[in-house]
Image (cartoon, rainbow over all chains, first blue to last red; front, side, top):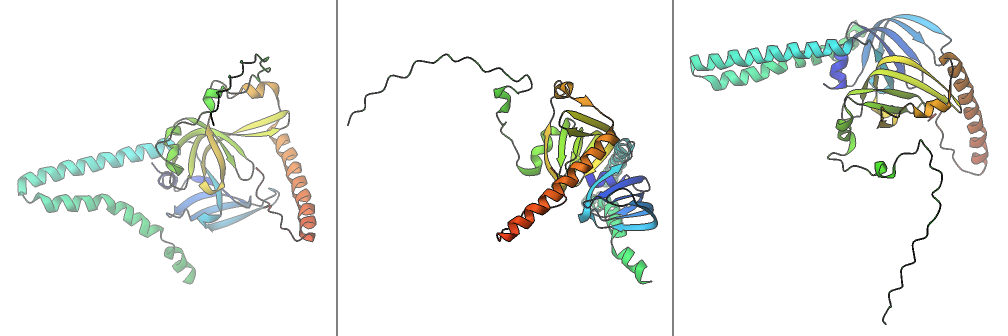
Length: 140
Length: 166
């Protein structure tokens, strides 16, 4: 399980982000993309000296500037569970597809469709994560 | 020209120097041959306790759970430790996800001996240690400022970044 995949399991959970400058942002993780760009909601921002604080409703952080993130302890177990569920679902799909193939005889095409189905969720996620989503919001 | 083989000098018995109890055995220092290079060399350290030094000088101790091609690391049950000469302080930090570019070095810990060096040190409050460290960093920055000035007068550049405290 890659770190970024693990981070998707932390969606809607409280996280703490420290930038390379030493500033920290504490809030609920709304979304992220493959570049580790993030959006947070209900954020408490702390400056480098940790002596000034401010509240923001929503913050967008470019992944490049992140030093580290701290996520809740239970995320590791949660991500594992989610991963297992996903795998089970996939196995079920494979089994069902196998049955279909035996019945209809046109298995080749079915198999290919199944393969794409497995990816669909990820693609959907990626689309949803796209920055345009937020840029559009700004333009409106 | 025939060279007569010189008789090899008789082995000299020297007194073995007093061994540092914390020093590793010489044979432990040999590098293993790695099946992978770059970030993939970390596979062997997954689910083991590791130490990570960050560019800002933070020392993290935790169990490596996952990593990727950028050496982004996920550490579980992480402790942050501050070393100050003969004192140290530590605090529990939980799950850490470190962006690879901020890592200076990391290595596996020998869990039997990882705390040996702490026995000769005094543990202090983490807040206290943090304040002392802050002062230390401030001093380094001001020293480096003077250094930069002096070097610049001689037409040289001081290669110092404020964020680099390791």
